[in-house]
Length: 281
Image 1 (cartoon, one colour):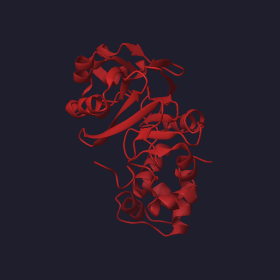
Image 2: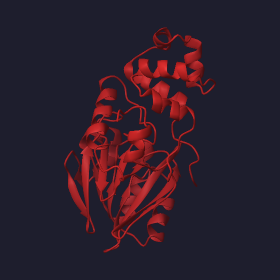
Image 3: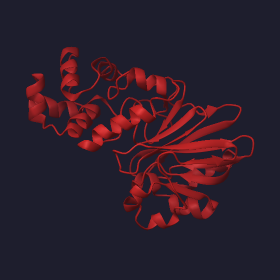
């Protein structure tokens, strides 16, 4: 399976920003010269306004206007379906059906053959098949957050592999009984090694209270905190907090770093700085 579009379309981005800021359709309409009906049509993918109206929407929604126009015009990242492979590590993706399309990843230390599964949303057989195809000895399961579409296969993966399960305690309420499987509570600054690959964790709260991003040499797993051209939904203070956290802890990484999100195509830090309307460059 492969992605041909972004996870979020123009209308999704408008809706996420509007809800995140706590604006009604009527309030946004008043600020942009559009009608509330037009706002609804935009969010339902029925209307893409002209560039002048897009700039007005961007101003009212605290988004980058040029980047929002780029999204409306169909921007996609250059290597959205490409795995990562260098002398030290490799990363491959499988797209799962967990009620929606969701990504799971396998990271491999090429020196030792040890590796990690990043998120386990469902279809454990497909995740395990990916690990087997890569010749992976799974030592860790790294959870970016506790939503069901990211942990639905956790029990089977943990039982089959015997891997350490890593997750932030602030998302234990979302895990329910699955929290008993967590061996390593994760928070900002947490570190581990997968084989000889150093992994660092950063806290990216907003979409969930315990959202975590995991970084290794040249790669970053952003969960639902950051998508290609967008981000996972959040409301009120959590919305602005997520933007700050991603800006300070994810987008501050080397621009060549490849970003593997929870949903949608793979991207890079440089591409997000240049094209994601939620984040200023």
